[in-house]
Amino acid sequence: MNTALLLLPDFALILLGAAIRRWMHLGDHFWNGVEKLVYFILFPALLINAIVTTRLDLAAALPLLATAFAVMACGMVLGIVPKLLSRLPALTYASMFQCAYRFNSYIALAVAGMLYGSPGIATMGLIVGAAVPFANLVSVWMLAHHGEVGLWREVARNPLIWGTAAGFLLNLLGFVPPAPLQAFLGRLADASIALGLIAVGAALRLESTPGVRGFSAWLVAVKLLALPAIALGIGAGLGLSGLNYQIVVLFAALPTASSAYILAMRMGGDGRSVAWLISVTTLGSMLTLPFWAAWLAR
Image 1 (cartoon, one colour):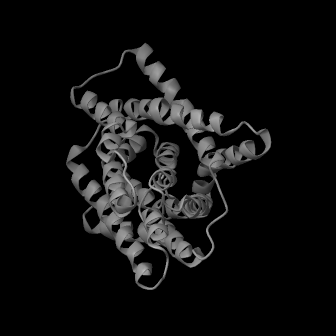
Image 2: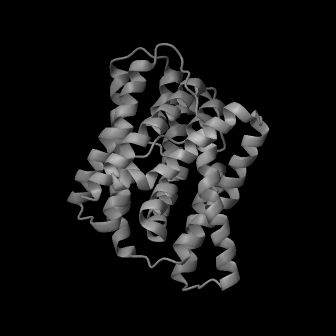
């Protein structure tokens, strides 16, 4: 119960974003601007601030990342299973497939920070920085024969990757930010969580393409239930414990990334069904994330 209460403010911000979008009629241009501000400025500042000020155990990074990548690979395998049993159009399937393993970075960093503070953000930031290119590569590969996107350019320009890399480089160099700079980064980091979660709520959509509900239900179960359980087993098998173990399980339990919708639309895919899956996994995670967090806190 205590864990659920800790996460309640984050989920309340998501619901607030949905309410603002519905009743204030601010328009798509406003929300696109908010998302760009969070993505390109505020979240990189959050990552740099957390990583620079946290003592890192790099020796534990390999089993941590190995667990995270193994979990994503399991999501891909489980995402392929329904293809053998369904008759979905190839483009619809390719669009929805990415929802089995992609993750919402905004919620990842918000939950890690709420439960574990700066060390949690730094650990989650390491996973996110490493996993984003992998997720993008696989997603584009699945959709590649239906369109083109500047994959390597997008990966190279991803601000979450650069924020993570900059933070780790400064940490390894022993850089200690002066008080004014640390306060500046701290203010940006504080703003990033609230605005990022409000933007997630504003993006919620609850309409899907007819005929995909069965596949959608499978993907929701994979993302919110199967992958965290798999992470528990793999992480224990690789000797993870403490913060690293807790963070990688929560990483596995995250809802699907909002960027899955953007990629599907760019490449001519079924954006409507992807948006529905993002919304359902986000709302479902309000129940499942507290459950997994409470399980880890036993």
